[in-house]
Image (cartoon, rainbow, N blue to C red; front, side, top):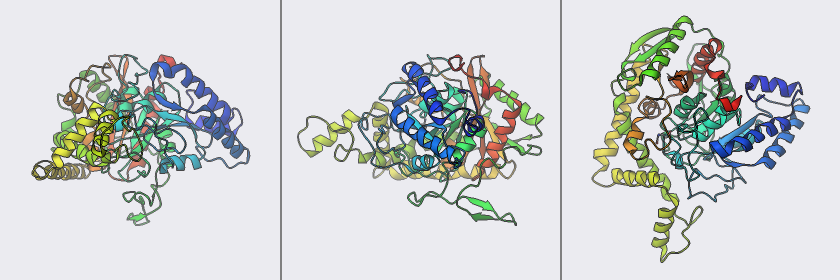
Length: 498
Ligand code: GLN
C-alpha cells in the first residue's frame, strides 16, 4: 500500500479492501518510525487525522466519495490550518495557530482528503536546501547526509520516503520543482494565479504559487485538480480559460480536469531545448540523464527543436532583487504585536519591535529583509527594483518567443544532484546560483513540472524540467505521464520505503 498510486488507493478504498482509517494508521506509523531521522514533519496530528479518516469512511460508505476522499495528505507548513500550528519554519511563528484555513486547505478538506500533518520547510520559504528551518534540516531519504532541496524539502522528502502519498508545496523560485528533482518524485508548479494564495504565508507575492507533489504525474494531476480554481479572496486568482469550439479562450471556473489529456500520444509534440539550459553549468551526471530522457521522448514521437532564452541568465539577479523587495514588505507584519514571537523583555515600543524581530527571524530571512529594504529605498529604487522589473518583462518575452517554435520546453531542474548538508551554507550566493534553471519560470509566471529521469552517479535522483505556456498544465502532465508509462524512474524508491 505504501507504494500504491492514488488510482490504486482509490480502488482499494472503494472496494473496501482497506478503510481510510487503516490507511491513515499505516502512514502515521511510518511517520512515527521515519520522522526522527528525516525530520520531514514539523507537526503531526494523529487524532485529527483519524477523525478525518472516519468521516471519509462514512462518506465512502454513502457512495459520495470523490477522487481524494480518504487519501492521506500533508501540507507545507505555510498553508494556514485552523486549529493546528502553522510555523512557516520560523521561530517567529513557532506558536502560531491560525484562526482560519487557507483556501487550498479548505478545498482539500471539502474533497475529503485526510490531513496527517504539516511539513518542514526553509524559514518563510527562503532557501534551496531546507537548512534554513528553525526546526532543523530535513534529510534526503536517498542519502541521509544530503539535503532534500528546498524550500518545500519536508513535503518532497515525506513523499519520497512514503510517509504520505501526496503533499502540497509552494514554488516562488523553484521550491516545488527542485526538491521534487532531488528526492526523485514528481512536482508541478502551475501558472501564477491558478492556485489561490489566500492563507498561504506570503514570501514574494508576485511569484509565490502553490502546487503539488506526488510520485507520478498522474498523482500530481489528481491532487492539483483539488487545488486549482478561482478564489475571490485572492485578487490574482484567475478563472482559467478553456477553449470554445472555435478554439478561442473563454473564462471558465477552473483549468478543467487536469487528468483529461494524460493519455494523449506525444506524436508531433515539439520539445524546445534552450541552448542556455544546456551550457557548461550542468554537471555531467545530470546531463547524461537528461539526454537519455530526451531520447525516450523522441522514441515516443516527440521532436526536439533548439530554442533560445537569451535573457534567462539575468533571472537570478532579477529574482534576488524582486523577491527580497516583496519579502521586506510582506514580513513587516511580524512585529510581535498581533501574533508570533514577542521578546520577553524590552524597553519601549520600538525596542519591542526590534528585539522581537531580531530574536524571531533567522539569518537568511534577515539578510533578505535588509536587501529588500535597501533596493526599495529612495535613490536605489530606480537603479535596482525598477531595473529588475524590466528584466522580468524581457525574460517573459523570451518564453513567448520560444513558444512560437515549440509546445513545451525541456531542460534540467538543478545543475547538480543533492549536495551534502552544510556544504553550501557558508556561501549564500553559491546557494542562490543553484536556482539558475527554475527561477525564470516564476518571473514569467509560467507552469513548470519536474519528473524523475535517472540517477546521478548511480544513487541520487535527477529531475527533468518541463515548462509550458500559460494554462498548459494538462499538457505538461500529459507529457510527463507518457514518459512515466514507458520508464520506471518514478516508481523506484529509497531503501527505507521498501
Ligand atoms: N531558492 C529560492 C529562494 O531561496 C526559491 C525559494 C522558493 O521557491 N520558495 O528564494
